[in-house]
Length: 441
Image (tube, rainbow, N blue to C red; front, side, top):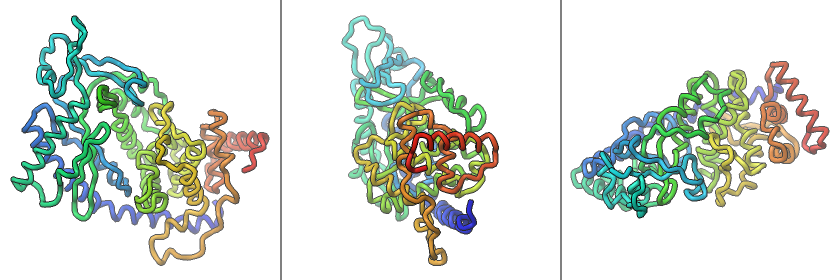
């Protein structure tokens, strides 16, 4: 990098230290809020043993520690059911809504050992006489039962002073699409949880097993994760789907075991997104889930350890993937690339792109957190837009590769890789782009 850029690098570290300094109190707030909700769920289990309490929530705590944003957190409620005894009936994605591994959960004709799940409050009997399946466990019914149990449990816990006054109110409990939403107060922070019933299963998902995205991850980690237990969550009123969030968080934790600034870069962009791009969380925009997906793709596109050795360079590896996704209006789901995560009508992708490009060109203003950091900003890293250059993967998917993104890093003056083969590949793509006459080059 140019000397002027090198002088500014400590700003990234100051910004990261500020995020980390808030980590401990955030973790304590999360722990208190989680304990309140676990107390309520213990009462739910006492009222109806079909709903279990999951205490193994280290992954959620790990993920919360990375975040500055206030997006809702999932709280999974496992169902006490022998998943191997259920009939998993695959259904088309169009029937169940978008989702991976969409299915109905049927109960075999004899129903042996599954009698608790044949009660009318959670079960719909099959009308087909003599069918192998006598009926199905219905997600919408399960959610309704769980909602009523949560209300009763909250009232019980408040009456017996099992939680701090004001920490949780049944009035905040809302049945939203495919989950229950609940606000829990902890310290000065209010955390929204999405309470989701799940069926833990050893279900094989061929679409995941075909995934070959191993570069950039610890060896065998992807294969190991997708072969472990999957969580089935509501996909519609009648169907279930594989929870990819659970798998993606495990992949994120695998990245955390590697040397380098992968997770630090995610924390920095989540903070910038919350403070600058979403106006302190007041405006709709990118979620932590979007940025997590960007990091997972960047880890595949930039598998070399030296890509993540320096903090500023690590952040820019996420930024070039994010900019390309916003410019092409497509961020592929990491495990189901045919799904586009940028289809929410509330996302103003044009305005978002402008904000992210402005930050990538001149990040210093957003990174200053203290009066001692004030001073003149270096000139913009790019002159004029690079939108035409960023559109190339939409025209030709072959551009979605390391050499193309290395060209983008070079445009932002943060390409410092010494590998001759990689430099040669980047220069080859650069010449190809120049031949195409793309005005940004």
